[in-house]
Image (tube, rainbow, N blue to C red; front, side, top):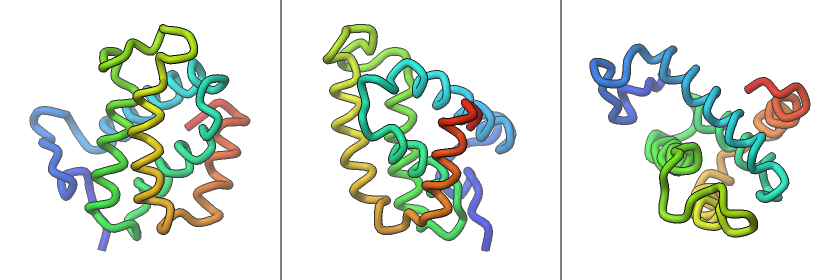
Length: 124
């Protein structure tokens, strides 16, 4: 069974078609990853988590939690502004670490390989 964004509780009328949602998440994640790569030492885990969350084999609850954490990470406005050097990504990192702990049991080597390639090529 293939899980869609609709299964995760997104509203296609509000958020647009699923493929547009996926493209937007990839684009924002890549832009934020480029800014945060030096400040967040576990960026490969974050991107591998993204690929795991897009994998239909990952349970819906786990996928939804990780996508929520990614949304917080890529949002320009959050509790501590990301432009503050050394602490800007601290709140994001805390949330992402908790989400990674939840999704880690479902992450496979192919998710990590996709993450390494995406980070190397700059293309999520």
